[in-house]
Image 1 (tube, rainbow, N blue to C red):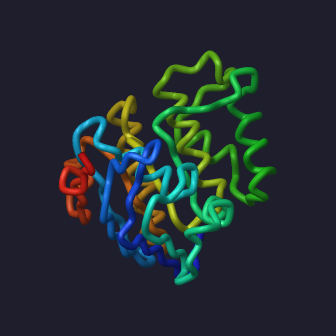
Image 2: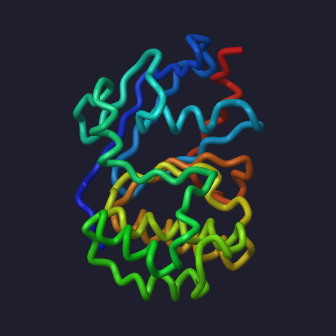
Length: 207
């Protein structure tokens, strides 16, 4: 799907938990067709950073601009413009794979073919509650194709994926970027995204 020109700018961002600053002075500037990898040891604050950017956690200091509009004080607007993939899958176990895909398609008013998505991700014809962790990750990743968001925040997107799953994810990511999308990827395995710009959060730790 062709995407319009987009940009996201994170300026001098500090992230805190209970007023304790965990990360400070984060600066990211991306335009359509660009991606960046956020790395660092477990517990450094990768998830906190993504959740702060999208608006699930309050900004301690700094600004977040999307398409040059300052949305630092408007987290709901940021959430409407960003496709977020968390490292924990939150799926309705009582729905079948097809049912959850059709639910998301209606919710996001998408024109994507859910059958094609199921085929691409090689998903089983059974209830979500009976899927393996790797299959559940694939289901959650398929949601990105239904959201119609130019900016993706991805938290450990390849964890628990087998080799084929990782290859499919990289194919999805490549298509997103080539179509003018933007992605910010948090991972403890940055070698998977060789060639990306990298921010090591160890240099921004507030500890």
